[in-house]
Image (cartoon, rainbow, N blue to C red; front, side, top):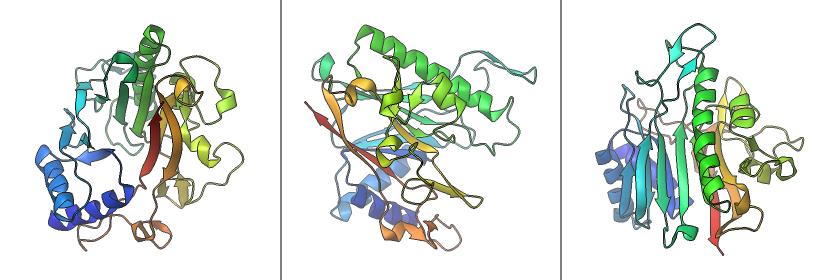
Length: 284
């Protein structure tokens, strides 16, 4: 594991975030090993670690490393009932999806709280799953939509960040029609809509998909499967938290042949098949 931990630590040092969200973490021990390696290298210190619960048979989880303590960290199972076009149904009785990981930070008074809803949706290549993958995506989006709508109804200026590997592009129905996410600020219509920060890099304005505005490369195409979305007050000058900037973290060493330099177990080298994304928030 040492080789991969060193590789990840090198990327984390470049990201240099106060809060780091990770996908596909095997265990609490693996997360602690990464934090310890960062400290040994003189990199950022993350004393606060959290790993989500999971029903995934492979054990892979969501995780966070933070310079500030968590006020709340819970797994929210995706358990809404859904009847699928195939005649099958989803009801949460089986490990049908990884939970949404809800984490709140900076809760110095309710108005200052920042809530993260971290996700890892099913891959389109998921074999043998009941119902179509797109139906799983719509189900996860519906549960997210319910949470965000409920919170904003109670406090319209609440700061919520919905993020993760959705295995869906920004234009797919689950993100647009169900979740209410838009890549154009002027397309936001309803109070509970979410702004997809890819819009800050010109996505949706006729930009060509390429390495500078995408996070993943597969089957000869650049794609945006990873997203960071925020509630409207965060980009409209209302509330405690505001978006200052959004970027794709892409130092040259995480690329090989113009593509993401994926980790190779055989060669014991590489980093990830996804580029990291980073949002900088400021408290008003």
